[in-house]
Image 1: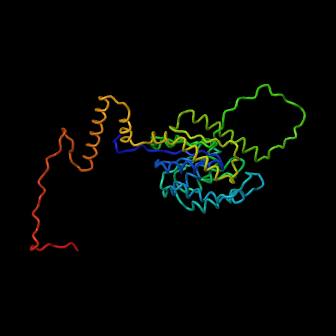
Image 2: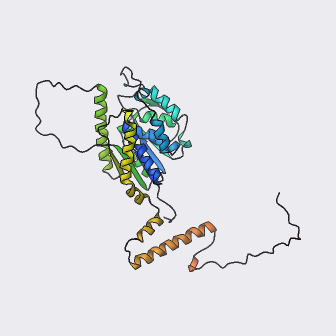
Length: 343
């Protein structure tokens, strides 16, 4: 790798409903520390945040937009035949924020995942309408009415892959940062629990609450298992277990959580995504032996020679010497001579 080439960084943004707003805080910290993002993959809420950032890489602007969102503007409940929420209000918001933008128009390459119920397989969008892809990716089964695209019945991408990291590696990412807002602390099973016939007075959760909580637990488990496979180089786990996935009233706090957890990982991210030449210079601070230092200087000199040779079209550095300097002097016309002007 030439010393002036940096590593390509891919960012995977997990599902998580309103918890996914924490992704914005992470992006803010990455921006502040000049961490480049070359590729983005997102699922569900991660797909929405990823799409907005790929359109315009400015996390503060995205924060201002989402701070205006209210629950009543997002959800249009309906008789639950295909889903509890029609999704028309969401589609209107997507139309207003994303419009007719296509993947080819984005400033950062983006990959959005959904799940094909009919064929039981993951679908990865990288062409066509960004808004349509996001709408499919956020279609939580049983909650949102599914999306039909080319005769496929599509639901939330988290069904198959809550944190889409593999597509980033396939597309050439050297470093993958995975942001997981579905993190849940491990709890030991409660042994020897006693079943009693007496009815408890505790209120039962609604259908919506039961479904959402169950789906969240399932996503947490899939995410944990997926990340154990070391598919990501850096994992930012954000503990938001107690946050309702449909509660957008805590947007500010959620974004703040994202900042906090990203800041805790920033040194590691900087080290992983750093410039190779900068890494070499940092290495000089360590107690390197003379042999290691000499080898390092030779390698750097060799790479510099190669790059300058390519840029100038000259064989610089061949046999350790510069090519002879040619006499480039020319006669300077005297003021009395007529000089043709470039009109």
